[in-house]
Length: 222
Image 1 (cartoon, one colour):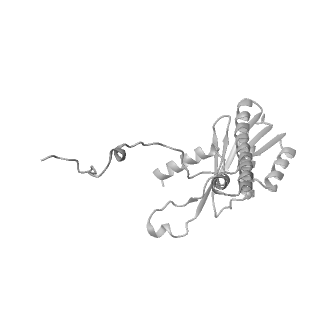
Image 2 (cartoon, one colour):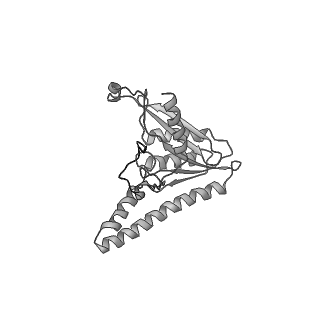
Image 3 (tube, rainbow, N blue to C red):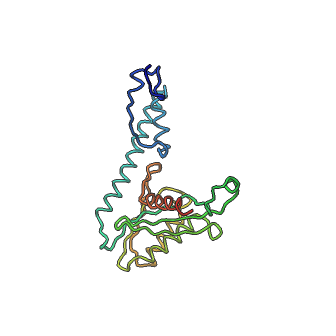
């Protein structure tokens, strides 16, 4: 009597047993604009629409590549000892407080905690500003207050700031942040502030790594 493995499928062919595992980049954080335009290029039967989508897609991707190369160029241009600083800033996803996982509390309204990060691209240092929703909201005023606090903490020799952020209209890309930077240039030791906005859908900032460390430690210390 022959013995056989319990897990072996007697109907499996050689092709079924020939596993070929592979790894690919995650599709969870893909760009909405790229996905929409690529879908039109692949599936649309209207040739004019396909041609227009290809042009828009190439333009969009060129802008994304230019933003990344510009940030790398700024990092290489300046040094931590210079009178200029290169930063990126972003607001983390809202954090439920306290972090409770029981079924009843999961569906109840929990207070939110906001965490804002300013990452120094020249030194790798990250400054965090945290508050809960009973203290303030998460609009342009709160973002501006954090930026003012960070800029006031800079060494007195710093007179130029190159800042990168996403294009969120309610927080970063608005007239209030522009007026704040104009005020700082006029009434402080800062002489120049260059605010550069990354292309939506292709925003990969060092702040995300800092937030990842927060999430990792949050699971250990809820």
